[in-house]
Image 1: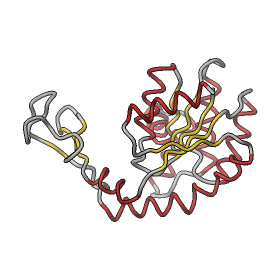
Image 2: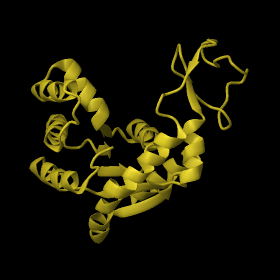
Image 3: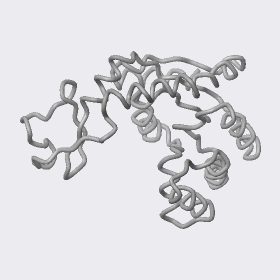
Image 4: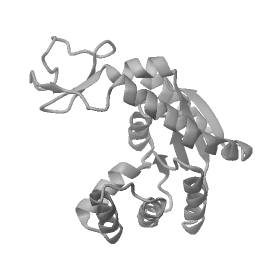
Amino acid sequence: MNIILLGPPGAGKGTQSAGLVERHGMRQLSTGDMLRAAVKAGTPVGMRAKEVMERGELVSDEIVSDLIDAELASMAPATGAIFDGYPRTAAQADALDAILARNGRTLDHVIELEVNEDALVERITGRFSCGNCGALYHETANPPKVDGVCDICGSTEFKRRPDDNEETVRMRMQEYRAKTAPILPGYEARGIVTRVDGMAAIDTVAEEVDAILKG
């Protein structure tokens, strides 16, 4: 089973991908994580990416596609793939079709996690983490049991991502609508798109995703 999880940043793609990995033994192919790993490992494509990033430029579609291609080639044929954060553009969608074909795979499902923009802003701007152990919290949805104290390790140091602010979230939503949403009609024509309410509870979303995969 090879699937794409689509949705703007904060829609829950990473959370749902982690659940699919745990429940079904699938492999999450997150381009950001793969880039960092390739650069750290010093692989040929990683060194190419490092040079680009050190120049302050965006990594090209070609490099990202080569990362995906190499990862799929290294996977057992029976292991399903979850594409998280890729494809982002029509060009990447075309490249993915070619990559899957080269590796003897087909795309089974495109699942879009739909969100309400205002609610998403509240979800993202309210999140923070423990500065010591990394445990995740939210001001209203999941605050520490004792205010200012981490439930897991007892630390009183917390941090927020610098880009977890309203301006950045709305800019990312705009970018998603402009660049990524336009790839959906092509997949819809193939009858493989399903939409899920990304604002629902995590377990509810997971159940709906599982139901889609079971067909």
